[in-house]
Length: 86
Image 1 (spheres, one colour):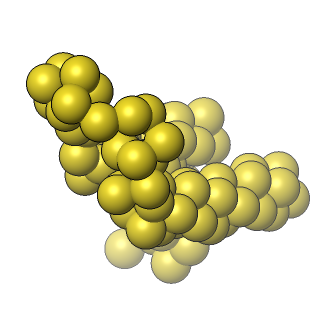
Image 2 (image 1 turned 180 degrees about the vertical axis):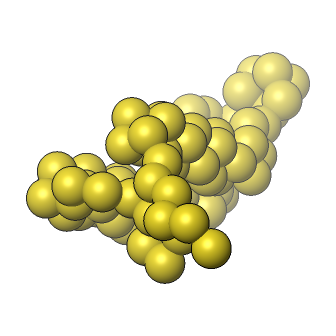
């Protein structure tokens, strides 16, 4: 099999897209209360009712962001992207 390499920019763009989709899917899982709920209870009561969900989102967001930053830092040392690296 011939030695083939892949364009570094295309691979980085693809991984950026994967991280972006992961972060987008995270925010879609956060349930936003209805407008009626805001009229019936106070803002802080609503925040208290979803605090565990918000904490989970924030922690997950920062973990994915840390992996993304680490990936970007490591990828600048990669000179050639071939099949074994993928």
